[in-house]
Structure formats: structure tokens, C-alpha cells
Image (cartoon, rainbow over all chains, first blue to last red; front, side, top):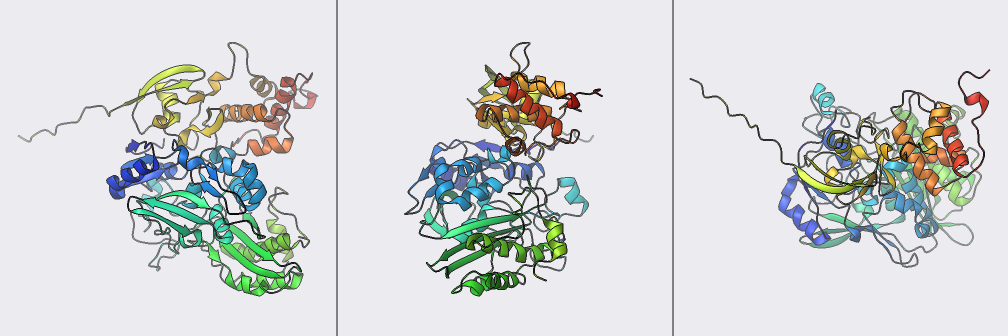
Length: 353
Length: 182
């Protein structure tokens, strides 16, 4: 039986009190909202905080403010179900509600928060294991050990950013508000992440993520495609978030293509963006952008599926997002709506060969 | 003589909270790091809620907190002060089973039965929110519950049968789904 380690549980009544508690608690204090990421990690002794500060009862963190024209502000404590089912978000930011709906299962979405998903701990086959398993391999550098088992000669940790909301928020240019006892700051989500499996967040431990500022809806369109083994419940092994603004004649004016689940942080496919900016979306330009997404994708063998196949699927998914936003026929069914990942079919038919 | 090491026989400090379980007010004391699952099974003797993966992957331990299905293995007991918890023991009214329980039993939607409490509670909320769900809606709502025996078909059929009966429709299980039919 997996039991939680012993810890002190504090329940602040306000954000100010929560921030004070965490600075009093020092490095051994952690915030918890839904607990769907932290508690499994604690049960496996990957994270062992002495003090846990519960945020679930803070109503301030569960509000939705503002109008889409100026940009809506989501409380970081909103559950993923609330984000996925909110009519205003569905209407103004369909990509956000869709990404929230693709995260884990209904039961976990009823608990987990959108802020918690943005701050999700990085994942790795050698790290997300129970204590005895990790002890059996003499641990890894992310917790208790010295070595990275997926790249033993590497000086860094290669655990994978596995949040679905992260690439979406980066692509649409959202910002997060971080509050600490020394003040508050607004940070673009793109700057929230570091390319390192251990120090994957540019957030100090004493900072509390309180709000997510979505950008004004001024003509951009975005979509998110997620690749996973099971259609109903899995972390992404690849996620492609694409945000475009097209001019009246269909020329791409602005493009952000962000790949998740393949590195320690969301990775922007800048070459793919360059391939379509200033051009119209046609099968040729989509093909060029998709080809350009192949080289920045360097998945390592520390999650599900073969790495070469995930690398190949990055091309395919970038093309799919662009076709969807450009109104071009997909040719193949969308894996989420058709409830099947067209994995083997796509691979054997080789759409770009 | 070697000094004997003093053993610490003190029990860990307990917290005491009040909450409602299956409609009744309950006061319970437990170690503060216990999950709701452990509190229900070990301190309230409600063993209908099952231990599964305990990591939030299987849905065995699903209970309703304020009417929403959540995983009791990832909810902290102390955080539930004042909340309403419903477990599978709270589904039947006296000796009368919930229509879902009846349909599950009739159709053999429970084989080993370990995942059944989680399925029943999750399906109960689905039928409260969507009284006539499509097969697709049932699949989506039950996506967080894993069953290793049935292959899910019987479970979907049982939810559909219960939905029809709860809507007052004269519904009988199809003959093919009853064991022993030829």
C-alpha cells in the first residue's frame, strides 16, 4: 500500500496568508491545489515536503474575470473540468477548453487545477516509479541519485514537460501572475519554462501562481493536437499547439507553433513558423512547415513509444494543425474526434514520403 | 551495561474533523497525512471504496465529494472538513438498490467486482446530469475508471438499461446479454 509520508498540512484563508506560510516554511514547503500531481509523487517519495499548503478552499483562485476582447483572466485554482466546461472559455478560447478536456480523465479533471497543470512536474520513465524501483537502479539525478539513466553521459536531466496546457498557453501568448511576499510579477508563459528536467520552472518556490491572463481575442485562431497511446487517458508523448493570424486573403501574418511532450520545456518550431509567415496556407507551404518541424524534435527514450516515430509524428501533427486552421482537407481522421490514433496507418502510408 | 534505547510509543497526533458521509454527519479522528480513501476504509469502516493503484490512474477509489466524482486516494482527509462525501454504501435506499446497482447485477456488468463501486458512483453522476446519455457520452464519463474483466460492453449496457428504467421506460435487458441464454 502506498501511503503519504508525514507532513504538516496548512489551510490558509487568503492568498496573502498562503504566501506568508510558504516563506515561513522555507524550501520544505510546497503548495497543493488539486493534488493530482503532488500526492502521487509524494507517495512514491519523489517529492517529500515537510509542509504542504492547501489552496483548494481559496475562492479567490477560482474566479474568471474580464472580457475576451480585452483578454480573460482565469484563476489558477479553477479545476480542469471548470475550464473545459465554461461556456465563455469554450466560445472565446476553444483551444484552451479543448486542451483542458484532453488532460487525463474526468475524475482527475474534477480535482486538478489549470495552474497545477501548467506547473506539472516533468516526467520520465526512470523517475515516475516508486521508491523501491528507483532504489533498484540506484536512483537518478532528478531525485536522490547522480546519473541521468536516459542519457548517462549527460550532465543534465532530460525529464519531459508533459502538460497539455503549457504548449497552448505559450502558443497563444498567455501570461501568468506570480505572487510572493516580496511582490508580484506578470510573466509570459513562454518564460515560465527552462530547458532542464530538474529546474524546469522559472518560478521561485515561494511564488504562488494565482492567475492566467489570456490574450485578447483579436482575430487569432489556435488549435491543439495531442498524441498519446490511449485515446481516453494518457500524458502526451507529443502535443502540437498552433496559433495563427491570417489576413483577409488568407496570408499568414503571425504564426506560433509550439511542441510539447518532447523536451524538458515547450519547444517553439521557429523554422516551421518561418516557412508559412507571409504565405498562404496551401498543401505545399503546409508540407514545408511540417518538414521544418522534424529537426528541432529530439525526443529521448524516456516516455512511451519509439522516439523515431514520435519525431515523425511531429511532422504529421504540425501539418494537421495547419490544415485545420487553414481549412484544408485533413485526408486522415482527427485522432481525438475519431477516437483512434491513426498511428500505424499513418506511419505505414508515410504522408510525406 | 548498554543503555537500552528508549522507544517512542506515543501514537502520532490525530486531527478531528466533521463531515457528512452518505447523508449523515460524522466526526472522525485520524492521522493528518491520511487520504480520504484511508479514512473511509480504516477509520469509518466503509470498505466499499477500493484500493487500486493509489496513484490516480485506475478509478477504483472514486467517491463523490459534494456531488462530483473524485479519486479518494488523492484527496486529503483533513481538507474535507465540512464537505459531503458519498460512497457506494450510500447508493441504496434502505434495502432498495439504486437502479444502476440492479442493472449491473442483472447484466453481469460486475465480474470480479473490484472496479464496480467506482463505476457505479461515476455513472450515478452522469445519469443525474445527463438522464439519457448516448453510448459516446457514457464512454467519455467513465473514461477514468478501468475494468480488467468485462471489456466494458456490459457496463455500458447496464448504464443504458438503468437510464431507461430511471426515465420510466419499460426496459428489459436484451436476451443476448443474460448469461445462459441460447
